[in-house]
Image 1: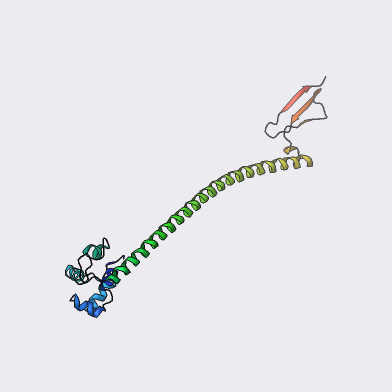
Image 2: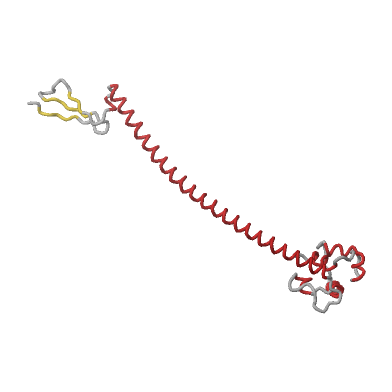
Amino acid sequence: MTTLGKRIRLARGNASQDVFARRIQVSKGSLGFYERDENLPNSDVILKICSATGVTLDWLLLGQGPMMTTDASTTDTSAAQEYAGEQQAYEQSARASMASYARLEQELEIERQERRDLAAENRKLHQEKEALLLQIIELREKVARLEAASRGDPSQRTGVVSIRSAPVGGHAVHESVDPCCRASVSANSR
């Protein structure tokens, strides 16, 4: 039994609320509030419940220890059996819940690990994408230079040396068409 109200109800046994309320000298409404855990009984009412039913104070207040006192003359065996059955069902339910929680925690940890793995894979793919984009840019630049060179655009030819057909002062003039280093070089044509 998990609540005081449920233990009071169990201690009442087969007696009606009206009869039991008169027995412990409280109103039927008050007893209903106690059993529904809407109000807490005072210490006088708790002692009267223990005295009238033979339940132990530890069991009634805390749900611990034996339900019934050994010398109780008003021992209700059906209530004790009902309590034992409910206690066993509660323990089985608690074990099942613990197993379920353990399984859920394990599944959650697996999902967390999968999420970490996916994040690492996404970072790696992002880096690879960035490297590929740089390669694409470089290749486009090369293609543009090659297309310009094939069209005969001398400003796009790099590292190509052209020779002028007309000698200047008896020497052929070599000119680099590389835009970075446009320099004219004279060579002796002997």
